[in-house]
Length: 134
Image (cartoon, rainbow, N blue to C red; front, side, top):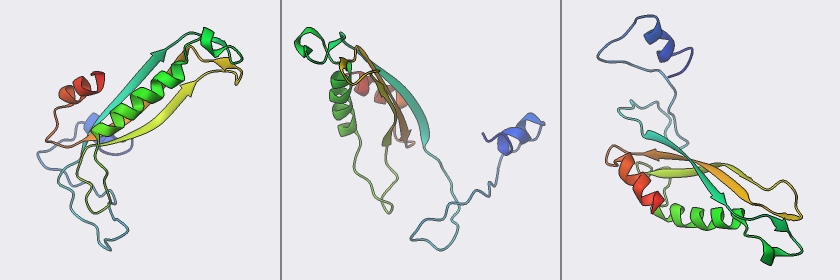
């Protein structure tokens, strides 16, 4: 998909049944470049929580959207196994973007996060989304 790589060649009319992509894939433990026969799928999800704004001196008048978001994140992360470099062909998740609040003395009424999920060929992304929504 790179603008100067495969995507560029496809847009120029090139194609094939088999592609060799010379992208480096060396790991810390491997001294050689390996042939990569598969990549994980990508799923980006924006998750939004809404609450009620109030001054932080009166939190009982508000509902903290950031707290809701964090509680949701703590449930979602449990759907993904712990991995290591040597055992990494599993579904993974990264919280890449997190936004909430504008002032430290205000209860935020809106919070959002964007998570990057990488999934293997054994995973149906629609089923994964259903689990996350649940």
